[in-house]
Length: 194
Image (cartoon, rainbow, N blue to C red):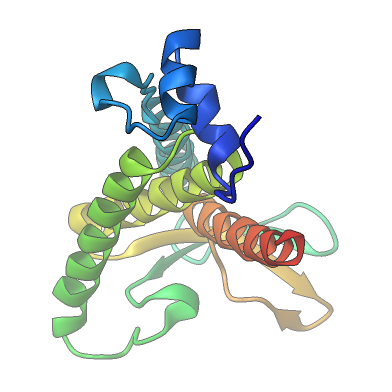
């Protein structure tokens, strides 16, 4: 059997349909695109949509049941507190002028478009990266929807220890953070594996 240096060789072989096509690949002839199975990453959009709807559902419930800054104590380290964040993550630029609204809407829109394109063009079989991108996409879309609908982002999760409170956040922020964490871990372990 021929030796191949291509690290994607096994992945490419998994895409080939018949033994005749495998023979054609091994003798060095390029395969026509029509001969390669191509599955899409559209199912990963389902995760992004689920994150978006869960985020909007929780924000809607909190907004309907609490007044601004009203707090429900859940545990000794967790509150539900309705807050309106006009800035970015952790209220960054919250006190800036009116330009920030359209700046954040523009940036969020670009990020959502790029993530969707990246997710759809990604090589199939990269489940961790696809899941991470889908979570980031769903979270970014959830916060973008808030900005377009209200002009601010609804935050309500208040984690604290004694007198110190972490800046309030929401499900969208959690999904974005988890997706980013998965990407960092994946890149670290993929680098070590290589």
